[in-house]
Length: 151
Image (cartoon, rainbow, N blue to C red; front, top):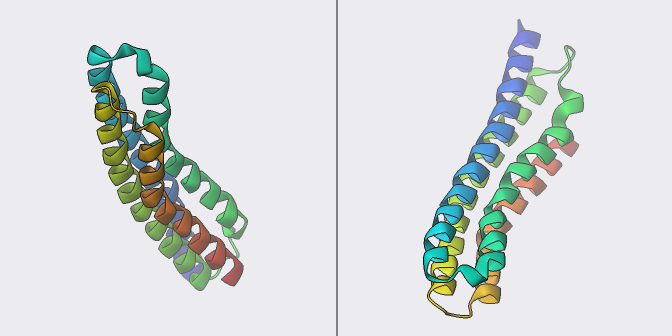
């Protein structure tokens, strides 16, 4: 019974890790992409900037996948309840942090896209500001890495 609970917790953790991170990137890139479509109506010459800023919130989905590779070797029939709980906790942590990070990063990027569409030269400044929410997603990767070392 304990082994079954452990493996179920582990797989739920992985599902949260990869699933929420993927959903986060889907939402984030969609928000930025929508802003890009609107900005192209005013300034279609800045498509390269729009594309780069639209892609930035997509990194969180990759982080969830990286997290999976950090914990996948523990997902065995012999895993302990502590390992299952650790993977669940790491997955929940990473999934939620990536979800919020991507959403708020997309808001920064979307505002930059609108400003570029209005003729302002803010591409580099927007990328710098978009890096701040990204930092917390990176910290969640580091936390999952440390969790994987501890189990």
